Length: 316
Length: 163
Image 1 (cartoon, each protein chain N blue to C red):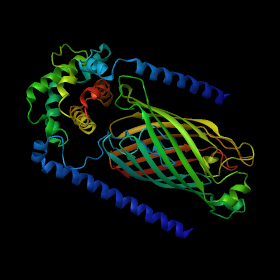
Image 2: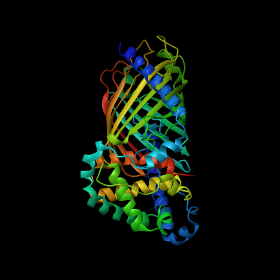
Image 3: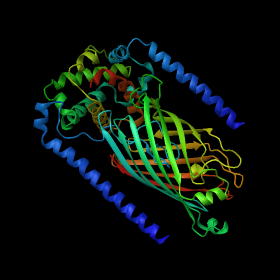
Image 4: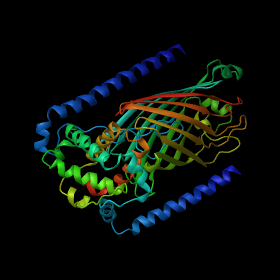
């Protein structure tokens, strides 16, 4: 427990350091390009400084709970980071969700290649606090899950294609591995690992300052995999709907809400759909903060798991 | 019950998506529609937005700052340094004025022919958008009004971005 906390602090420190490094790098790139303006003019298009972060603010979304670019709960069809079709973007995040009976800690990172492919990794730690003791697992018993994600943009550009209603459409897979196989079997889960396959469509209606996303996810995951995959009630893939709406207040601020439908595979405890309402702030392209009020419903017999979701992301 | 209605909605969406794909395939060429957009279609619905930009004098003032921003931005400066700034600003005022249903006519060339040989990439296009946003912010154009204009300009990417 103590060791884990230490690990968290190291990770957070690492995030802060990498964030400031990235900002320094970005501003160094900017200023060097600026000071060599004259040479840039003569070489016109072939500026020697590597371009960074040229997509528009907040149009890369934030890091969702499984590490993909999206809202807080749901992935979007956007490719994470701010890279254009000629650039690479990347970011790292730390997210904490405080619920009445549980806590979720979540760290991860992603790389976006040429606004086409996104690779992501997230490590989730689901602390059962006193529920763990009540279940005989021990106070603060924690499920840990690693998620590796790949997302590919198929067609469309959510931001640029304002003359058609055609959304940006992407497909993705999230491979998840939980570290508590024995306990998962005990509660009726059929596996400690699984893949979620999903397809999503995202559209920015710029004239309305409104972004909408719909995701269709095929999954067996119980509580997104924190309680394993498949169960005594159901062990087959189910199609689940996820939706987000975000309203842009300014270049730096967006508010919105999300819904995530979930399966209900385990006999021991009912599983509910998830909801949240969020506000996201991106003062620069190198950092964003997201605060949300999340309603995660019933989790292992504890009703009304509602609480604060806070996330920080650094990147370019 | 809820699940059923969601499924129905999803099916409807899938059908819409499929139709959209077909419609896109049926369009002659992407460049064609972009060239049309480049000739700045007048949108009567944007008349109130024209007022929010401060009418034609407002556009003139914004374009002055816009050009300053473009020249100060290393990502866009190379494309404007050897050009007639007054001419470009006047054309932009006319073009935006027409889009916002103001009392103007755009007599400039199509976006496609103007940008064909410039080798502009997506990064430079976005940089220009940011420089325009900065100029509009300086002149206190409401964010929603800014986005209504940008929504009309964004499709020009296919005529402007050539690499």
